[in-house]
Image (tube, rainbow, N blue to C red; front, side, top):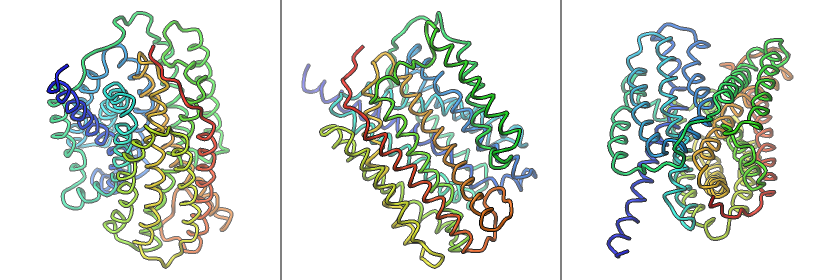
Length: 477
């Protein structure tokens, strides 16, 4: 191969990464960008907040339900093809969201948008892993990992600016030109190869069982604090989801072509890294959920100042994650991943020393520590997960990794609000649903500190899981 051809290939793979990063950012951004627009949407469409909340919930639940299925279809039809289709589906769904005159149409459009997001999320890591050689994979996946967190954490800031200067539909219109441009570039950049050529034996029964079970589980978890965790509705929902998912597990054990290959979890490197990843996002969304309330309701910061303070987290991670991936290519993942979660645990401990009188910039400095810890963790962990996958199953593994991430987000939101309200009930004897407005600062801080201690414990558990991983042997099958 000539020097010119080698240079062209080297340049091309970084363009592929750029294209993948754009889609990943867009899909993860919309998981949180709508949160800040819910009050405005509620007022404009004249619907109550408990109903408009489904603009967010329907998006996340659809993604979780579709990710393993999309991962399998990617290995069947081609990761590049499905990823590129995701740009168009996402752009079309965004257009429908922006044009929706009613809440029913908006929620339906968010489901369509989430289908596109699932196509993007499930394939981003797989395309990256197969585009880059192993000695560069950690750095490339580090960039994708940073993009995921940038999208998740900058959503409220970008959404607030767009709504402030335009209106709520702007948070959806912004995706359309990006999606179209990403699709056009993807036609020239993304790989067209696929591994399997036949859909015979596809596990349709397992697919249905998984979708029903995971949607029931996450729907119940999302509403557990509102319904109360001991209510008949919650118990029935959790019991039903466990039974359906157990039936799914039995089905997958005997299916010829299972939707999820549970043999992957016999690999300790894969299972430990996956569990640690879920716990990292559980803790991540404890801060993402509670810090805006602290900044605005206790410190009385404006939405703009709140956004700027919280931006320190993703910016720090964006700087650390690629470097962490680069280092992990040389020394392995264990030290960085375990150390990163320990740094995050320390960050939560330090948050417990914040008071009702600090300046927002002090909060921003604390959040920098989380960016460093998460940046240390995500890149090596993603590379570790993808390196354990047989090449024929990287699409499935990429989908599972994204699924774990989204489940962690849902659990993190539910955990933080539930712990907060339970602690308030202990302190006041009153029952709260959600985070109440105009709460006495002392009570707020006492409940918030309990959330931070719980999140620190989650980080420690993740660090233990990370430390138990073994160095994987390269899979080539």
